[in-house]
Length: 375
Image (tube, rainbow, N blue to C red):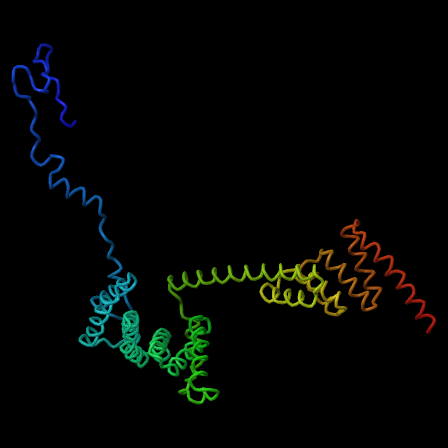
């Protein structure tokens, strides 16, 4: 290793000098490295580099692409790959070659050509070339009317050029095809405000006509199978929306509980109602809202909420107890007595139920006596 010297074989060999040589001045018997096997040989270095750098997978280039012949499908696939990696200029070039190749090869596939124009339009949009984006989207829509992506991209391009009326029309058309595109909803709200400021109360009259998307197109879009990427994106959005929904639900429920503690029953009722709009199967919300209705002497609504809770949870003693209070408020003492007995059967230790049952029994007896006297 390094500059260290090997001991010569045999016991009576030369001794070391202070400088590391041999006393007799004999040369060291170092073995010369074999040609091509040294640590830094070009051949070995190349071999190591090959081992360290695995071959790049380009199999995606040969994936089928609609009715396009293989050489044009390869161009399209390469464009898609470049676009995904943010190389929009290079992707644009590949799509252009594919479009020109379709004309040269006499390819008659409106769907494939529509996709190529739409993809190239996406490149133009990313590069800030809105005018050419609009032109390619319009060509795509001539080939495949009501195609979703060209409509959405053209709307975005119109908006970037501040051509708000045309953008509004395209966004509204998109939403006829798919109401779940949040970006289109957001843009419609944003543009509506701008058009009101720009054109005043009569802004709708200045809009171009919004085409009515045929029901057959809407149905076809709903039945169209989605790609893995689309499914993953939808799942991610759904998870994000679910997280927001859960956070809002927790906040509203806590606000409702705090308002009950403060005796603000009408405000608490509203919070619980908002919670139920998010989670209509949450049993505790019905019993919580029933308290508010009882305090506000709205006994019929309190009874309805308790009915809903019992339907969700047939052994919910809170629901039976609060429904008994609602029946008592409605002067249906027999039903109140029946519910209180149900509570005590579920849990004999509920003292409030015992006390209420005693009171309700007295009210029932008094009511029966009064009815007998009238008779």
